[in-house]
Length: 372
Ligand SMILES: *[C@@H]1O[C@H](CO)[C@@H](O)[C@H](O)[C@H]1NC(C)=O
Ligand SMILES: *[C@@H]1O[C@H](CO)[C@@H](O)[C@H](O)[C@H]1NC(C)=O
Ligand SMILES: *[C@@H]1O[C@H](CO)[C@@H](O)[C@H](O)[C@H]1NC(C)=O
Ligand SMILES: *[C@@H]1O[C@H](CO)[C@@H](O)[C@H](O)[C@H]1NC(C)=O
Ligand SMILES: *[C@@H]1O[C@H](CO)[C@@H](O)[C@H](O)[C@H]1NC(C)=O
Ligand SMILES: *[C@@H]1O[C@H](CO)[C@@H](O)[C@H](O)[C@H]1NC(C)=O
Image (cartoon, rainbow, N blue to C red; front, side, top):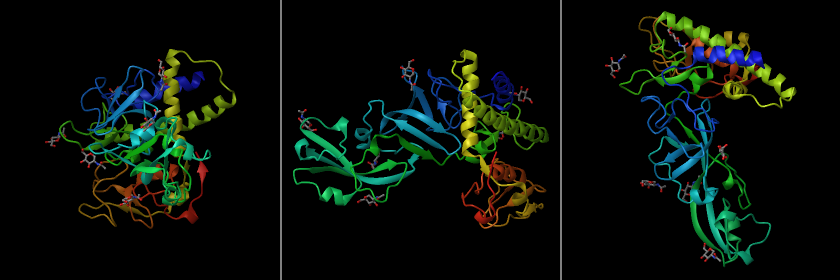
């Protein structure tokens, strides 16, 4: 354990952003960093507009949606760009009745139309799941996505409303009254797009205080611009450490969890521990990649002075978010023809078997899976 903590004290600070330190609310359960920022706790320009979080008096992280009010944050996945929310009043269905994401950068992963019904309690068969927090002794409230089920209900029931509800999964055939509405709301965001940067161990941030262009940073105090050579070298070193760190952490977690660590760590170690779980989470999401020979078989392109890129490609690499320069080597994914810096895409493909842009698998038959 000592070695792990040493490792984490040594390396993350080396690669972490200095200008915008990670912040936490009292419970320290959710690391808050770009594109999120903690109001009143972080410096200006540490977060993207609309991504401000707060802390409530219980030390829990809070997101305020302009038209839907306050939700508590269960967790944030910076890599998949998802945030899970729950209701402080413990009655999510009630919040869903007036849920509106206007004015926020978030959107639901999926929507499904749900019909809310109000029935006299004695008319409701006991096997139906009712929404407890909206029901009382005389009236029961139920919700379903099935119109057939709605039509089969006795006439003493009336429809309160039918509306699209944000869901994490879309149930095509659901002939039940739902209990799923009690679960967290999962929202996602598309801008700023930092998933590729996160995947190669970087942290996104603003490139420039005066506009909203974002870059991928490994040490923000040295790397304001990603085009100088020193920074590139530093970056490679940083990346190597990050990968070593991640594999090391996973190894140690496996050992640690099999050893059933039962004693609590002290205050200092708690921080190491939370770093550790962040890295572990990241590396478990991205642990399945391709082998080097498959990656090497994909076409490489060296950029000429004014040569356009092949296929449907812009002028920036969507993994490291920096612009292509002449003489740089790119690698393109067969099938979708999306190209990236060879260094970036190689790193990505070692840990993911899909294109970072379109998420299609280049050639499923050729993919050989291995766990990092
Ligand atoms: C980032 O790099 C600069 C200059 O290279 C260095 O002075 C600074 O200590 C580094 N930051 C961290 C957190 O290592
Ligand atoms: C945060 O800590 C407070 C006590 O300090 C506790 O009551 C609360 O349940 C905790 N919240 C979470 C989400 O762990
Ligand atoms: C959400 O709120 C905005 C602003 O009040 C309004 O224009 C919009 O129609 C609402 N959307 C829904 C689905 O109610
Ligand atoms: C929900 O219902 C509305 C209006 O009936 C319809 O336009 C919309 O396509 C439906 N959405 C889904 C996801 O089924
Ligand atoms: C139960 O709820 C309904 C509507 O939600 C309300 O009209 C009724 O007065 C309530 N009954 C009791 C006993 O609270
Ligand atoms: C920041 O962006 C502005 C315009 O958006 C530009 O004029 C300025 O030179 C940039 N500064 C740096 C340090 O890149």
